[in-house]
Amino acid sequence: MLNSTLCYIEKDNNYLMLHRNKKENDMNEGKWIGVGGKIEDKETPEECIIREVFEETGLTLEKVFYRGLVTFINTKYETEYIFVYTATQFSGTLKECNEGTLAWIRKDEIFDLNLWDGDKYFLEKLLDDEKKPFSIKLSYKEDSLIDVKVI
Image (cartoon, rainbow, N blue to C red; front, side, top):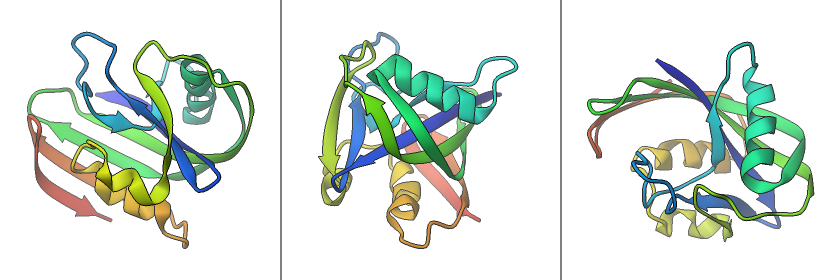
C-alpha cells in the first residue's frame, strides 16, 4: 500500500495544476492533478508535501492546510492513501516540471479539464467554503470509477 500527498496551491482564484504529459508508464498520463508524491520512510505527510512541491514546482510552501484523505482503490494499481492539502502562502519562482506541464487554472474551469472522475468529488470539497476535513474512498476498475464513498 502506498502513502502519498497531493496539494492544490491557490493564487488569485486559481489552482496550480499539473498536466501529466512527460513521464513514461505514468498511471496519471494525460490527467490534470495537483502536485505531490510518495511519502518517504520516516517522513510526515506535511514534510512530504513541502518537499514534493519544491521538487516539482520550485515553490516553497510556507503554510499548508490538511483537507482530507482519499483512499484510492484500483484493480490495476496498488491501493493508495492520499493526504490532500491546500496552500495559499508560498514563495519562489515557478520552474518547469519533469513530470508534466504546470499551469494556473481558474477554479471555475477545473472541472473542464481531463481529471480522474473521482477527483471531482474531493475537488468539490476543496472548493467548499466550510473547509471541513473529508475522507473519500474511490474505487476504480482500471480507469473507470465504479464506487464512491464519502465519509
